Image (tube, rainbow, N blue to C red; front, side, top):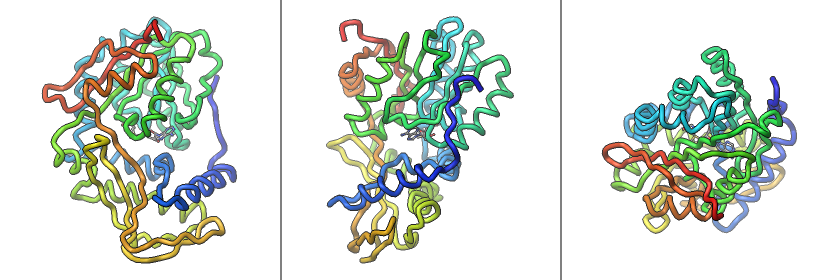
Length: 322
Ligand SMILES: C[S@@+](CC[C@H](N)C(=O)[O-])C[C@H]1O[C@@H](n2cnc3c(N)ncnc32)[C@H](O)[C@@H]1O
């Protein structure tokens, strides 16, 4: 597999990094865990389940926008160029763009969820036998090494799912600036969820079937499974809330009682009612999107939305002045 970066399955260094990162977050005055640890194989499968829930409008809304504008989006990639997707997951919506992109030379899905990424890539190779599928296992909050074979290839970045909203603003800006610095990057197709009625927003992250709660709690299960922690899963409750000042949904696990948990040779104490911040999902307006893009050297060339302005797929182009 030319250019493919493969990491060994859950290496000791992955576990060390998981423990170190978890302890760093859980020993802060306001406890937190990084959302990137939500995505082991089980987490990725649970996220796919979330995308089919009636309350979770973002996936089907974005899928509709991609379907309606697939030809225009595919045309951003020049003949033989590469579509490079960040946080590709199951690449389901991406297939709409790949279907319209017979002229693409390569598709590069980048994801932290290693086994899920490779399973998805195997499936894509069967669906698109003439396209180079070059998966990269990487953390997109750090500089990503793209396959060296693509150094001189024109690239279009693709970051759907409003995953950018999971990043704190400085990280989001660093990611946008990092992609701007890739060689020969022609455009950045960015999916962002838009500010809307609070009830619709909260329901999307707190579904009636409790799939999102299971997805978020999987981070504690993962710490038990991979890092030998002893979280009592029933002793934490899931809570999703809207912060109008930061325009974001916050996802917490709240300790139901005073308790102590062992992790990596340390004991972490929780007070009754104490929250762990697990993930945030920022929502955007046309203005906040344009500001974020401009701060990282991009201009919003086009903004495709659905009829109800629930979600936007923006085409960013490099700002020559930046
Ligand atoms: C919200 S899901 C979106 C999946 C898919 N792009 C979609 O739109 O349905 C986020 C994806 O990003 C991946 N991911 C999360 N944090 C990551 C990180 N720091 N580096 C690389 N991938 C990450 C997850 O494994 C997951 O596949």
